[in-house]
Image (cartoon, rainbow, N blue to C red; front, side, top):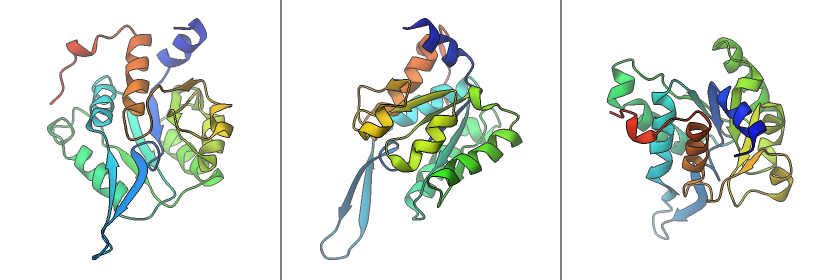
Length: 187
């Protein structure tokens, strides 16, 4: 691992994730008769988020969407025993944000948590994430991210969004800190 990347990752206290194309694959399945929509995500990404929560990293989801998908996944991850016991902090969710709006809402969230931009990492995949990714101390993108995003990030995950990209970033953060994930307790 490059020394400058390792130095940046050791400072990280917060991780901000876009939703569609990062947490979810970006695919939407629509039932032909009912019109019901479904989205797809990987459980290994959730495990990666848990690993970071275990070492005290705060997590936020920020998305342009206003549907219930983001709320459902956030509620699921906030109902884990480690959150209910107070050991892990809750994931914060910001809906209806895009472009500069994402950067502005996260700036307020960072201030509230007494975290500096250089102590924040973010993963995004499209132009609505551009302003946020330009501000954070460590910017990442999933493998399928748009080229304009790939050009500005510090790290491109080998896997696609919703299919392990978050886990790749989480493992990179743990590796930079010399933390063996097998030694972490996840409940």
